[in-house]
Length: 87
Ligand code: FES
Image (tube, rainbow, N blue to C red):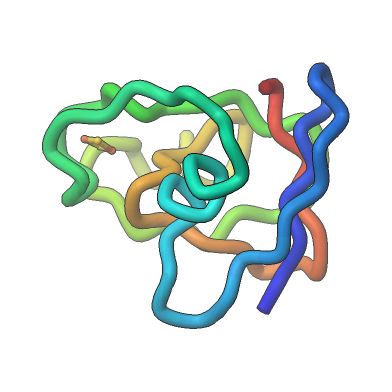
């Protein structure tokens, strides 16, 4: 499991194995857009303020993945114990 903190709205959520960040945040009451939920459309792309995403989408380039400036909440996870998102 890892923790996701919403840098703007202030909530902190624990993302359990097998559950997406998107589903976790929605279960916590956040209203977030999505479409494909398979990492191919980009609807759920969110800016990352801190932490190291574990990118599992098919959209970002390798350079974008390495830079870690944004991530797809429907499929990607975290390499660091905590992610801080621009939400
Ligand atoms: Fe399509 Fe996440 S909803 S990439």
